[in-house]
Length: 66
Image (cartoon, rainbow, N blue to C red; front, side, top):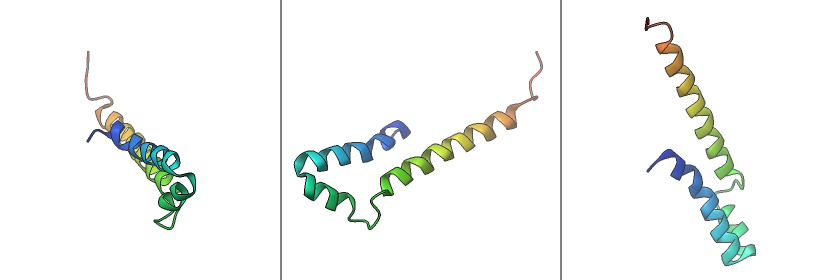
């Protein structure tokens, strides 16, 4: 699964749950004990991608000459 698709999944789940039954949707999304779980996952994914990009750029800096 692509990273972009993975970040969309919690949003799709939230929209489906709220559309199906707003009261039950909140209960389903909070069933893990943390109602901000999906947002924390997306933040961790984003920060990981930023760190990986910075490390990649830093490791390839100055290695090439024109």
